[in-house]
Amino acid sequence: MAFFSSTKKVKPAKRLTGSVRVPGDKSISHRYAMLAAIAEGPSEVHYFSSSADCRSTLACLEKLGAKIERKDETLTIQGGGLKGLRQPSGRLDAGNSGSTMRMLGGILAGQSFRSVIEGDASLSRRPMERVVEPLALMGARIRTAEGGLPPLEIEGGELRALRYELPVPSAQVKSAVLLAGLYAGGQTEVVEPLPTRDHTEIALEQMGAEIGRHGQTIAVRGPARLEGRKLYVPGDISSAAFFIAAALVVPESNLVIQNAGLNPTRTALLDLLVPLGGRIKVLNVEMINGELLGDLHVESSALEGGEVPPEAVPGLIDELPVLAVLGTQAERGLSFRGAQELRVKETDRIRALAENLRRMGAEVEEFPDGLRVAGKQRLRGAEIESYGDHRIAMAFAVAGLVAEGTTVIHDSGCVDISFPGFFQELARVTE
Ligand code: S3P
Image (tube, rainbow, N blue to C red; front, side, top):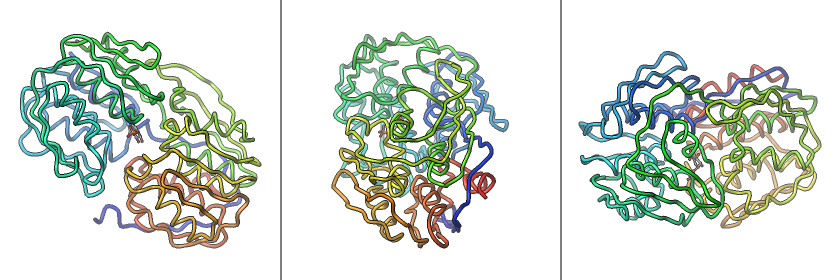
Protein backbone atom coordinates (compact mmCIF):
# COMPACT_ATOMS: atom_id res chain seq x y z
CA MET A 1 0.00 0.00 0.00
CA ALA A 2 1.47 3.37 -1.01
CA PHE A 3 0.43 4.80 2.35
CA PHE A 4 3.04 2.72 4.19
CA SER A 5 5.70 2.76 1.53
CA SER A 6 8.13 5.49 2.57
CA THR A 7 11.61 4.89 3.97
CA LYS A 8 13.29 7.09 6.59
CA LYS A 9 16.94 7.35 7.52
CA VAL A 10 17.91 8.10 11.12
CA LYS A 11 21.42 9.27 12.04
CA PRO A 12 23.08 9.22 15.47
CA ALA A 13 22.12 12.24 17.58
CA LYS A 14 24.22 14.51 19.80
CA ARG A 15 21.30 15.71 21.88
CA LEU A 16 17.58 16.48 21.98
CA THR A 17 16.61 19.97 23.14
CA GLY A 18 13.69 22.37 23.05
CA SER A 19 10.06 21.56 23.36
CA VAL A 20 7.66 19.25 21.54
CA ARG A 21 3.93 18.98 21.24
CA VAL A 22 2.51 15.53 20.55
CA PRO A 23 -0.89 14.89 18.89
CA GLY A 24 -4.04 14.77 20.98
CA ASP A 25 -4.49 11.47 22.80
CA LYS A 26 -5.71 8.79 20.40
CA SER A 27 -7.61 6.75 23.00
CA ILE A 28 -9.43 9.80 24.36
CA SER A 29 -10.17 11.20 20.88
CA HIS A 30 -11.88 7.96 19.77
CA ARG A 31 -14.06 8.03 22.88
CA TYR A 32 -14.99 11.71 22.69
CA ALA A 33 -16.00 11.38 19.04
CA MET A 34 -18.10 8.24 19.61
CA LEU A 35 -19.79 9.59 22.73
CA ALA A 36 -20.44 13.01 21.19
CA ALA A 37 -22.16 11.27 18.26
CA ILE A 38 -24.65 9.53 20.57
CA ALA A 39 -25.08 12.43 23.01
CA GLU A 40 -27.90 14.95 22.86
CA GLY A 41 -26.93 18.28 21.31
CA PRO A 42 -23.64 19.69 20.11
CA SER A 43 -20.16 18.87 21.40
CA GLU A 44 -16.98 20.72 20.64
CA VAL A 45 -13.80 18.65 20.87
CA HIS A 46 -10.53 20.58 21.02
CA TYR A 47 -7.09 19.22 20.16
CA PHE A 48 -8.62 16.12 18.56
CA SER A 49 -5.97 13.58 17.52
CA SER A 50 -4.54 14.02 14.02
CA SER A 51 -3.98 10.25 13.78
CA ALA A 52 -5.17 8.13 10.88
CA ASP A 53 -6.86 5.83 13.43
CA CYS A 54 -9.06 8.65 14.72
CA ARG A 55 -9.87 9.64 11.13
CA SER A 56 -11.17 6.07 10.71
CA THR A 57 -13.47 6.58 13.70
CA LEU A 58 -14.79 9.86 12.27
CA ALA A 59 -15.38 8.30 8.86
CA CYS A 60 -17.36 5.45 10.46
CA LEU A 61 -19.44 7.87 12.52
CA GLU A 62 -20.18 10.00 9.47
CA LYS A 63 -21.31 6.92 7.59
CA LEU A 64 -23.64 6.26 10.51
CA GLY A 65 -25.18 9.70 9.97
CA ALA A 66 -23.29 11.76 12.58
CA LYS A 67 -22.85 15.41 11.61
CA ILE A 68 -19.19 16.25 12.12
CA GLU A 69 -17.31 19.40 11.17
CA ARG A 70 -13.55 19.48 11.47
CA LYS A 71 -11.47 22.64 11.43
CA ASP A 72 -7.80 21.94 12.12
CA GLU A 73 -7.74 20.35 15.57
CA THR A 74 -11.31 21.22 16.54
CA LEU A 75 -14.36 19.08 15.91
CA THR A 76 -17.97 20.05 16.20
CA ILE A 77 -20.30 17.09 16.44
CA GLN A 78 -24.10 17.37 16.45
CA GLY A 79 -25.21 14.47 18.59
CA GLY A 80 -28.49 12.81 17.71
CA GLY A 81 -28.94 10.95 21.00
CA LEU A 82 -28.51 7.27 21.79
CA LYS A 83 -30.77 6.20 18.93
CA GLY A 84 -29.80 8.95 16.50
CA LEU A 85 -27.51 6.93 14.25
CA ARG A 86 -28.81 5.45 11.02
CA GLN A 87 -28.04 2.33 9.03
CA PRO A 88 -24.94 2.91 6.92
CA SER A 89 -24.99 2.34 3.20
CA GLY A 90 -22.20 -0.15 2.73
CA ARG A 91 -19.56 -1.38 5.13
CA LEU A 92 -17.90 0.67 7.86
CA ASP A 93 -14.12 0.76 7.53
CA ALA A 94 -12.08 0.81 10.75
CA GLY A 95 -8.81 0.87 8.77
CA ASN A 96 -5.92 -0.15 11.05
CA SER A 97 -7.77 0.74 14.24
CA GLY A 98 -8.63 -1.99 16.74
CA SER A 99 -10.12 0.63 19.07
CA THR A 100 -12.56 1.77 16.37
CA MET A 101 -13.77 -1.74 15.59
CA ARG A 102 -14.05 -2.97 19.16
CA MET A 103 -15.51 0.11 20.82
CA LEU A 104 -17.86 1.02 17.98
CA GLY A 105 -18.96 -2.63 18.12
CA GLY A 106 -20.44 -1.86 21.54
CA ILE A 107 -22.47 1.04 20.15
CA LEU A 108 -23.56 -0.87 17.04
CA ALA A 109 -24.81 -3.71 19.25
CA GLY A 110 -27.44 -1.32 20.63
CA GLN A 111 -28.76 -0.11 17.26
CA SER A 112 -31.92 -1.38 15.65
CA PHE A 113 -30.17 -1.96 12.32
CA ARG A 114 -27.63 -4.32 10.81
CA SER A 115 -24.11 -3.10 10.07
CA VAL A 116 -20.81 -4.56 8.95
CA ILE A 117 -17.46 -3.23 10.12
CA GLU A 118 -14.22 -4.28 8.43
CA GLY A 119 -10.55 -3.32 8.64
CA ASP A 120 -7.27 -3.39 6.74
CA ALA A 121 -5.09 -6.51 6.37
CA SER A 122 -3.47 -6.04 9.80
CA LEU A 123 -6.76 -5.47 11.64
CA SER A 124 -8.28 -8.41 9.78
CA ARG A 125 -5.84 -10.69 11.63
CA ARG A 126 -6.69 -9.38 15.11
CA PRO A 127 -8.96 -11.23 17.58
CA MET A 128 -12.55 -9.98 17.90
CA GLU A 129 -14.02 -12.87 19.89
CA ARG A 130 -13.23 -10.90 23.03
CA VAL A 131 -15.88 -8.29 22.16
CA VAL A 132 -18.24 -10.63 20.37
CA GLU A 133 -18.68 -12.85 23.43
CA PRO A 134 -19.93 -10.22 25.91
CA LEU A 135 -21.99 -8.36 23.29
CA ALA A 136 -23.69 -11.62 22.29
CA LEU A 137 -24.42 -12.33 25.96
CA MET A 138 -26.15 -8.94 26.03
CA GLY A 139 -28.35 -10.01 23.12
CA ALA A 140 -26.61 -8.72 19.98
CA ARG A 141 -26.27 -11.13 17.06
CA ILE A 142 -22.75 -10.90 15.66
CA ARG A 143 -21.07 -12.87 12.94
CA THR A 144 -17.31 -12.86 12.36
CA ALA A 145 -15.05 -14.42 9.77
CA GLU A 146 -13.60 -17.82 10.68
CA GLY A 147 -11.58 -17.83 13.89
CA GLY A 148 -13.38 -14.81 15.37
CA LEU A 149 -11.68 -12.43 12.95
CA PRO A 150 -13.06 -9.30 11.25
CA PRO A 151 -15.26 -8.28 9.58
CA LEU A 152 -17.99 -8.08 12.22
CA GLU A 153 -21.57 -8.28 11.03
CA ILE A 154 -23.67 -6.85 13.82
CA GLU A 155 -27.41 -7.25 14.11
CA GLY A 156 -28.18 -4.89 16.98
CA GLY A 157 -31.34 -4.68 19.03
CA GLU A 158 -32.74 -4.71 22.55
CA LEU A 159 -29.87 -5.41 24.93
CA ARG A 160 -29.85 -6.97 28.40
CA ALA A 161 -27.65 -5.65 31.20
CA LEU A 162 -24.72 -7.93 31.97
CA ARG A 163 -22.12 -8.54 34.66
CA TYR A 164 -18.95 -9.47 32.81
CA GLU A 165 -15.52 -10.48 34.06
CA LEU A 166 -12.90 -9.56 31.50
CA PRO A 167 -10.80 -12.62 30.57
CA VAL A 168 -8.01 -10.28 29.32
CA PRO A 169 -7.24 -6.89 30.82
CA SER A 170 -8.37 -4.77 27.86
CA ALA A 171 -9.70 -1.23 27.93
CA GLN A 172 -11.19 -1.73 24.48
CA VAL A 173 -13.28 -4.69 25.59
CA LYS A 174 -14.25 -2.99 28.85
CA SER A 175 -15.33 0.05 26.83
CA ALA A 176 -17.32 -1.99 24.31
CA VAL A 177 -19.34 -3.55 27.14
CA LEU A 178 -19.87 -0.21 28.91
CA LEU A 179 -20.98 1.44 25.67
CA ALA A 180 -23.43 -1.39 24.99
CA GLY A 181 -24.53 -1.01 28.62
CA LEU A 182 -25.74 2.53 27.80
CA TYR A 183 -28.42 0.89 25.65
CA ALA A 184 -29.37 -1.94 28.03
CA GLY A 185 -32.04 -1.61 30.74
CA GLY A 186 -30.50 -1.81 34.23
CA GLN A 187 -26.97 -1.97 35.52
CA THR A 188 -24.17 -3.37 33.38
CA GLU A 189 -21.02 -4.28 35.28
CA VAL A 190 -17.51 -5.00 34.07
CA VAL A 191 -14.93 -6.55 36.37
CA GLU A 192 -11.32 -6.02 35.36
CA PRO A 193 -8.53 -8.33 36.57
CA LEU A 194 -5.99 -5.49 36.42
CA PRO A 195 -6.67 -1.79 35.99
CA THR A 196 -6.68 -0.53 32.39
CA ARG A 197 -7.08 2.98 30.99
CA ASP A 198 -10.29 4.53 32.32
CA HIS A 199 -11.00 7.23 29.73
CA THR A 200 -14.40 5.77 28.84
CA GLU A 201 -15.53 5.87 32.46
CA ILE A 202 -14.32 9.47 32.89
CA ALA A 203 -15.87 10.66 29.63
CA LEU A 204 -19.20 8.98 30.38
CA GLU A 205 -19.32 10.66 33.77
CA GLN A 206 -18.46 14.04 32.19
CA MET A 207 -21.34 13.62 29.76
CA GLY A 208 -23.86 12.82 32.45
CA ALA A 209 -24.11 9.01 32.50
CA GLU A 210 -24.66 7.20 35.77
CA ILE A 211 -21.37 5.39 36.14
CA GLY A 212 -19.25 4.38 39.10
CA ARG A 213 -16.41 2.16 40.17
CA HIS A 214 -16.17 -0.05 43.22
CA GLY A 215 -12.85 -1.86 43.52
CA GLN A 216 -12.32 -3.68 40.24
CA THR A 217 -15.96 -3.38 39.15
CA ILE A 218 -17.28 -0.59 36.94
CA ALA A 219 -21.05 -0.19 36.69
CA VAL A 220 -23.10 1.86 34.25
CA ARG A 221 -26.86 2.33 34.23
CA GLY A 222 -28.92 2.18 31.07
CA PRO A 223 -30.75 3.38 29.17
CA ALA A 224 -28.53 6.42 29.53
CA ARG A 225 -28.84 9.97 28.33
CA LEU A 226 -25.59 11.71 27.41
CA GLU A 227 -25.25 15.45 27.08
CA GLY A 228 -23.04 17.04 24.44
CA ARG A 229 -20.37 19.36 25.83
CA LYS A 230 -17.10 21.12 25.28
CA LEU A 231 -14.14 18.75 25.60
CA TYR A 232 -10.38 19.13 25.47
CA VAL A 233 -8.04 16.27 24.55
CA PRO A 234 -4.64 16.13 26.33
CA GLY A 235 -1.49 15.27 24.35
CA ASP A 236 -0.92 11.54 23.83
CA ILE A 237 1.45 10.18 26.49
CA SER A 238 1.96 7.06 24.36
CA SER A 239 3.29 9.30 21.56
CA ALA A 240 5.28 11.34 24.08
CA ALA A 241 6.88 8.04 25.17
CA PHE A 242 9.15 8.03 22.10
CA PHE A 243 10.46 11.49 22.95
CA ILE A 244 10.79 10.62 26.63
CA ALA A 245 12.86 7.55 25.75
CA ALA A 246 14.96 9.44 23.20
CA ALA A 247 15.76 12.26 25.62
CA LEU A 248 16.70 9.76 28.35
CA VAL A 249 19.14 7.76 26.23
CA VAL A 250 20.74 10.45 24.04
CA PRO A 251 23.49 12.18 26.08
CA GLU A 252 23.17 15.90 26.94
CA SER A 253 19.45 15.97 26.18
CA ASN A 254 17.08 18.39 27.82
CA LEU A 255 13.58 18.27 26.41
CA VAL A 256 10.13 19.53 27.36
CA ILE A 257 6.98 17.76 26.20
CA GLN A 258 3.98 20.06 26.52
CA ASN A 259 0.45 19.21 27.60
CA ALA A 260 0.93 15.47 27.96
CA GLY A 261 -1.97 13.46 29.34
CA LEU A 262 -1.18 12.26 32.85
CA ASN A 263 -4.17 10.10 33.67
CA PRO A 264 -2.75 7.70 36.32
CA THR A 265 -3.86 4.67 34.26
CA ARG A 266 -1.52 5.87 31.48
CA THR A 267 1.61 6.97 33.36
CA ALA A 268 3.08 3.53 34.09
CA LEU A 269 6.09 4.45 31.94
CA LEU A 270 6.94 7.36 34.23
CA ASP A 271 6.22 5.28 37.33
CA LEU A 272 8.66 2.66 36.07
CA LEU A 273 11.44 4.90 34.76
CA VAL A 274 11.76 7.44 37.55
CA PRO A 275 12.83 4.88 40.21
CA LEU A 276 15.26 3.39 37.64
CA GLY A 277 17.06 6.73 37.46
CA GLY A 278 15.06 8.51 34.74
CA ARG A 279 15.28 12.28 35.24
CA ILE A 280 11.69 13.17 34.42
CA LYS A 281 9.87 16.05 36.08
CA VAL A 282 6.18 16.74 35.82
CA LEU A 283 5.27 20.44 35.72
CA ASN A 284 2.15 22.64 35.42
CA VAL A 285 -0.34 19.88 36.20
CA GLU A 286 -4.01 20.66 35.69
CA MET A 287 -7.23 18.75 35.22
CA ILE A 288 -9.57 19.24 32.27
CA ASN A 289 -12.74 17.17 31.77
CA GLY A 290 -11.61 14.83 34.51
CA GLU A 291 -8.28 14.09 32.80
CA LEU A 292 -4.93 15.19 34.23
CA LEU A 293 -2.34 16.80 31.99
CA GLY A 294 0.94 18.63 32.36
CA ASP A 295 4.39 19.27 30.91
CA LEU A 296 7.21 16.76 31.13
CA HIS A 297 10.81 17.83 31.50
CA VAL A 298 13.19 15.03 30.53
CA GLU A 299 16.98 14.97 30.84
CA SER A 300 19.43 12.32 29.68
CA SER A 301 19.92 9.78 32.43
CA ALA A 302 21.93 6.76 33.50
CA LEU A 303 19.20 4.13 33.72
CA GLU A 304 19.48 1.08 35.86
CA GLY A 305 17.06 -1.27 34.04
CA GLY A 306 15.75 -4.56 35.39
CA GLU A 307 12.50 -6.53 35.26
CA VAL A 308 9.13 -4.97 34.50
CA PRO A 309 6.65 -6.30 37.09
CA PRO A 310 3.97 -8.37 35.23
CA GLU A 311 1.14 -6.45 36.91
CA ALA A 312 2.52 -3.24 35.32
CA VAL A 313 2.28 -4.71 31.82
CA PRO A 314 -1.35 -3.78 30.90
CA GLY A 315 -0.60 -0.14 31.79
CA LEU A 316 2.54 -0.19 29.64
CA ILE A 317 1.23 -2.20 26.72
CA ASP A 318 1.74 0.53 24.08
CA GLU A 319 5.07 1.63 25.58
CA LEU A 320 6.76 -1.80 25.64
CA PRO A 321 8.29 -1.45 22.14
CA VAL A 322 10.17 1.72 23.02
CA LEU A 323 10.93 0.38 26.48
CA ALA A 324 12.68 -2.63 24.91
CA VAL A 325 14.83 -0.26 22.85
CA LEU A 326 15.57 1.84 25.92
CA GLY A 327 16.52 -1.33 27.81
CA THR A 328 19.49 -1.87 25.47
CA GLN A 329 21.00 1.32 26.89
CA ALA A 330 20.24 0.61 30.57
CA GLU A 331 22.87 -0.72 32.95
CA ARG A 332 21.14 -4.06 33.62
CA GLY A 333 19.15 -4.34 30.40
CA LEU A 334 15.42 -4.92 30.61
CA SER A 335 12.98 -7.80 30.61
CA PHE A 336 9.23 -8.21 30.63
CA ARG A 337 6.92 -11.25 30.74
CA GLY A 338 3.13 -11.59 30.78
CA ALA A 339 2.83 -9.50 27.61
CA GLN A 340 1.33 -12.11 25.23
CA GLU A 341 -1.12 -9.38 24.12
CA LEU A 342 1.78 -7.78 22.25
CA ARG A 343 1.60 -10.66 19.78
CA VAL A 344 -1.87 -9.58 18.62
CA LYS A 345 -1.30 -5.84 18.20
CA GLU A 346 -0.90 -4.12 14.80
CA THR A 347 1.81 -6.73 14.25
CA ASP A 348 3.40 -9.37 16.49
CA ARG A 349 5.41 -6.79 18.39
CA ILE A 350 7.51 -9.32 20.32
CA ARG A 351 8.69 -10.87 17.04
CA ALA A 352 9.21 -7.49 15.38
CA LEU A 353 11.24 -6.20 18.33
CA ALA A 354 13.43 -9.30 18.58
CA GLU A 355 14.03 -9.39 14.84
CA ASN A 356 14.92 -5.70 14.47
CA LEU A 357 17.00 -5.50 17.65
CA ARG A 358 19.05 -8.45 16.41
CA ARG A 359 19.55 -6.70 13.08
CA MET A 360 21.09 -3.86 15.10
CA GLY A 361 23.44 -6.34 16.79
CA ALA A 362 21.63 -6.46 20.13
CA GLU A 363 21.50 -9.49 22.38
CA VAL A 364 17.85 -10.44 22.79
CA GLU A 365 15.98 -13.39 24.25
CA GLU A 366 12.43 -13.94 23.03
CA PHE A 367 9.76 -15.60 25.21
CA PRO A 368 6.20 -16.54 24.21
CA ASP A 369 5.00 -13.63 26.37
CA GLY A 370 7.91 -11.26 26.52
CA LEU A 371 11.47 -10.29 25.86
CA ARG A 372 14.80 -9.83 27.58
CA VAL A 373 17.37 -7.41 26.21
CA ALA A 374 20.91 -7.17 27.52
CA GLY A 375 22.06 -3.77 28.78
CA LYS A 376 24.74 -1.29 27.75
CA GLN A 377 24.75 -2.42 24.15
CA ARG A 378 26.30 -0.70 21.17
CA LEU A 379 23.64 -0.76 18.52
CA ARG A 380 24.60 -0.75 14.84
CA GLY A 381 22.61 1.10 12.22
CA ALA A 382 20.61 -1.48 10.22
CA GLU A 383 17.70 -1.99 7.85
CA ILE A 384 14.58 -2.01 10.01
CA GLU A 385 11.26 -3.53 9.02
CA SER A 386 8.30 -1.77 10.66
CA TYR A 387 5.82 -4.45 9.51
CA GLY A 388 3.45 -1.51 8.99
CA ASP A 389 3.31 -0.98 12.77
CA HIS A 390 3.55 2.64 13.89
CA ARG A 391 4.99 1.89 17.31
CA ILE A 392 7.69 -0.38 15.87
CA ALA A 393 8.72 2.32 13.37
CA MET A 394 8.93 5.00 16.09
CA ALA A 395 10.71 2.75 18.63
CA PHE A 396 13.45 2.03 16.07
CA ALA A 397 13.77 5.70 15.19
CA VAL A 398 14.77 6.11 18.85
CA ALA A 399 17.20 3.18 18.50
CA GLY A 400 18.69 4.87 15.44
CA LEU A 401 19.55 7.98 17.48
CA VAL A 402 21.94 5.98 19.69
CA ALA A 403 23.23 3.54 17.04
CA GLU A 404 26.48 3.75 15.14
CA GLY A 405 25.93 4.65 11.48
CA THR A 406 22.64 5.05 9.68
CA THR A 407 19.41 3.25 10.50
CA VAL A 408 16.98 2.79 7.64
CA ILE A 409 13.33 2.33 8.59
CA HIS A 410 11.20 0.74 5.90
CA ASP A 411 7.44 1.30 5.72
CA SER A 412 7.90 4.33 7.94
CA GLY A 413 4.70 6.03 6.68
CA CYS A 414 2.78 3.91 9.17
CA VAL A 415 3.67 6.44 11.90
CA ASP A 416 0.60 8.34 10.59
CA ILE A 417 -1.54 5.75 12.37
CA SER A 418 -0.90 7.58 15.66
CA PHE A 419 1.56 10.42 15.00
CA PRO A 420 1.57 12.21 11.64
CA GLY A 421 4.67 14.41 11.47
CA PHE A 422 6.62 12.26 13.93
CA PHE A 423 9.87 12.27 11.93
CA GLN A 424 9.70 16.04 11.31
CA GLU A 425 9.08 16.71 15.00
CA LEU A 426 11.96 14.40 15.95
CA ALA A 427 14.30 16.11 13.47
CA ARG A 428 13.27 19.55 14.80
CA VAL A 429 14.47 18.82 18.35
CA THR A 430 17.48 16.66 17.46
CA GLU A 431 21.03 17.89 16.88
C1 S3P B 1 -6.58 1.12 23.84
C2 S3P B 1 -6.36 0.00 24.62
C3 S3P B 1 -5.21 -0.89 24.43
C4 S3P B 1 -4.12 -0.21 23.62
C5 S3P B 1 -4.64 0.47 22.40
C6 S3P B 1 -5.65 1.53 22.78
C7 S3P B 1 -7.77 1.93 24.12
O1 S3P B 1 -5.65 -2.05 23.75
O2 S3P B 1 -3.13 -1.15 23.26
O3 S3P B 1 -3.58 1.08 21.70
O4 S3P B 1 -7.86 3.06 23.59
O5 S3P B 1 -8.64 1.47 24.87
P1 S3P B 1 -6.34 -3.28 24.51
O6 S3P B 1 -7.62 -2.81 25.07
O7 S3P B 1 -6.56 -4.32 23.44
O8 S3P B 1 -5.35 -3.73 25.54
